[in-house]
Image 1 (cartoon, rainbow, N blue to C red):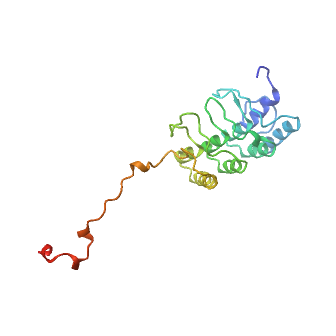
Image 2: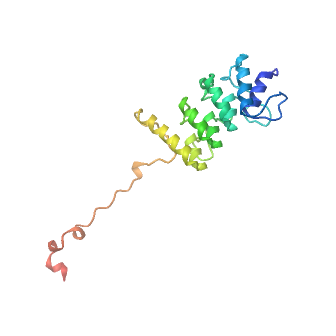
Image 3: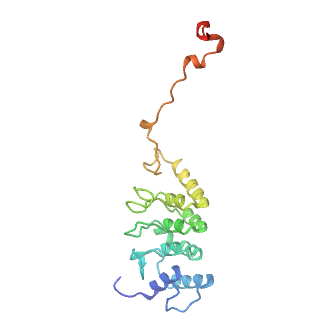
Length: 206
């Protein structure tokens, strides 16, 4: 984006709860709702990535990703109600995070629930190599690492629902895999040890 877009900046600031914005509006829940609603009424497309400002690795992010990053459920709800779900699985490069990754990292179960209902991809992988998984972290990996039991359960139920409709199971869905070739068979019990006492020859009892 070569030119400064005031509406996009105000949307960025509102979703990210940026208190240094030059725009005059309340930063409470009513202010967030009113500002985003006004921008939408003015024609802004909340599904499109917008320019970020400040120390962001990703220079373009969706308003939904910004709201999830800051744990802003009011903004998330309004955005989803106005078309943000069209790009719900947009990947913010170079990090490779989706809105669901950000929501899981902030630990906002309410936001995670809203995203899952709108079709967020719980199997999306965070880049090519994550902190916890060399194949890239899924939101489920991150939730497990953070230890948020409530979100882990929500994601697990969602994953199981997807698996029940898939044949075969997607390769590498979970980072901990069982290799059948490495499974060790249980040794058979000794015939002498398992035989009834009265079946053991008298000579063996002496």
